[in-house]
Length: 457
Image (cartoon, rainbow, N blue to C red; front, side, top):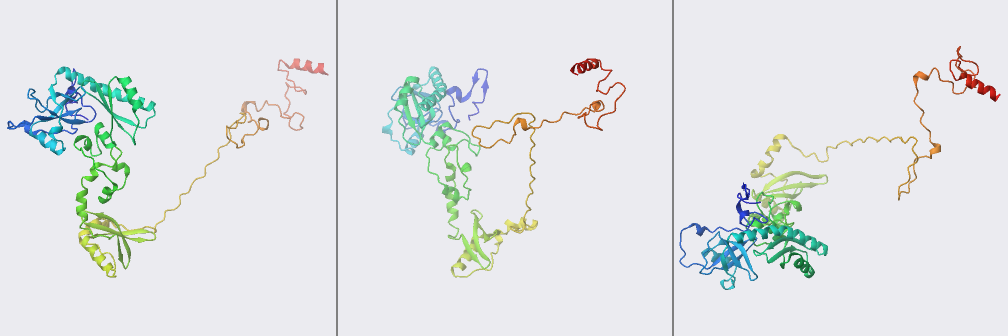
């Protein structure tokens, strides 16, 4: 969000409008005006001693008297009176155009009291830059203080005066807010004079700025100064889908651009017949589906038990003819597609589309049963029941569990002794190195086991 000069960087910093006090929030086209008389070398016969001054890159403007001792033209930075110190702004209009601007805003010349002091110098611009850099951290701290006090409000923007003696806090709230305690905390924290100003959601969006869904800067921050109410009826007249996400702007309200073309649509709708939502034919009752306002075509379809059938585009003359027949108690045989509207289904007729509602049924999808997972707990103990879980545990006690058998070793199958030595017919044949008592002479520990057995006897 900025002009081309803001993106032109140099070794010392950023050039463009930021060097003249900063862009602030939003773009460089916020409520700007073009003084086309300033480019013409025409001297004013009756000069107008009032100029229009823009503050904070167009966030707000004011009219000020120009003394005879001060020479100032459009585009100059000026130091003006505010009644409580001074402020610095840019002269946006001068001369005869200011008279028309005041007439448009219904401001009388006698109500302009403050004057222009002088043209701003380098020190004034440096002080203004310091004030602009101080606004964002001040807003963050102000939001934290208001949240600490529990106030139902949102601080959207903060604007310091050019001399840094006064700060204006712009906030949004659903109702009235008692911010007396908040002002005390702000005055103690920031050491400036505090002014609280409540604004609406659209004014907040205008101050912050941004890019709309059309790809351009927001209308409220560039040129729109008076906000009119927008209702969903404007979307219905233009045959727009009532989608709150698409119809809402960045402020959360309905887009102001819904009112731009509303008059054109209303003028076009006057040619359409009234009370033509339903038309009777011998085939059935036709219901209005949609209306193409600019092509002057109305789309109808029959209502059946299994849904709507083919859509018939009819022009306005055909709709009036059928409506007059219904008023006389007559019904046409069927909807005849008008020659002017036949182009809508030319492509579908070539491809061969047909209404198959209720004639084709898709087979039911077979769902596979999920296999139950086996318990692979092993020798682990029973899982303790979770807190608040009253279901019994499926794990049996440890003494009732069966331990898995050890893996078999194929090399030890021949030398393994029988499971029950007393069972007849299951003992392996004895070799030369074995005796009847089960000893093995080749084993060096055989004699010890033999002596131990003799002692027991």
